[in-house]
Length: 321
Ligand code: TXA
Ligand code: MG
Image 1 (cartoon, rainbow, N blue to C red):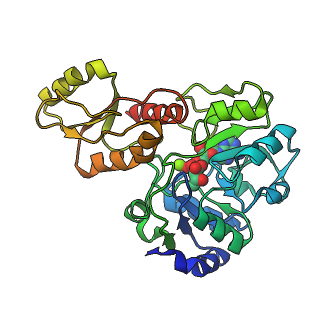
Image 2 (image 1 turned 180 degrees about the vertical axis):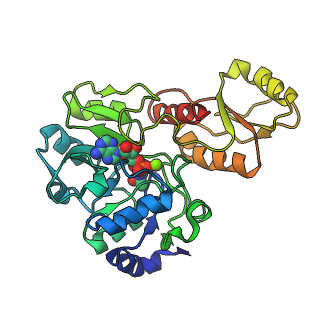
């Protein structure tokens, strides 16, 4: 059931009795449960159809509670959270003994984040504890950026869906593993690597896109039903014609408006610059499925800033088959 911000008190009650609450963050909608209640956390995995060895991110109300959830916190982590929280950065740290293995998928590390979204912060503040929340989609699918996406995908598997409108960033948080030296970016996302390097005053390494180093970072994540094909601008018209000759229903997603495309192609864009592209990407991929397209031909944005994260998600979507 989708409800407005006026129902936050009820959402807190649902969390306290071990239920599931979907809530908006600035990145994507999360499927939340009381992180201290292993049975509630198990319900997240059931609702998503997600394997139990995939770790969840714990959302916390403020960086002041970091030490309740993590131990051996390096100075680099303190600097990053001081600079980036609330925000689209998840830090992976050694877990404190109180964090259950249901949350971490059996790992001795935990992913933590203070989101930058007024409703999420109100919910966390009123609840008081940590809220474990993956993206509120079925396992392997595209993350939801609107309350209606959550309802369409999870229906009554979730007790309450708080509607906060469309997500401001539209792609998941950046995940950085601070248990290794140098720190390693496991997933590019809402905070770009250039920003992390500026804060840390040192280069950080990043896992080659598509590798599955962290559990849950399967190459085939973030995929719509339609096949995603990544094409450079110069090749779009030819690729679209080829696919249409194969009697496939074709859509195009590009940063700029495209002319000279064959009649009958579905224009899913223009997506705009990298930040705008990030904001609309998942909704456009959902639209491709809703319109029953077979193929979405995507022209990626330039790699700078959040463009890197958009390109990462496009590559994962393209690898899904
Ligand atoms: O923006 C986001 O991060 C959203 C919102 C809801 O916060 N959440 C999200 O959660 O994308 P999820 O579960 O869909 O993706 C979390 C990723 C997984 O790929 C998981 O492998 C990784 O975080 N992760 C969580 N804890 C980890 C850990 N201890 N070590 C390594 N990776 C971890
Ligand atoms: Mg996810």
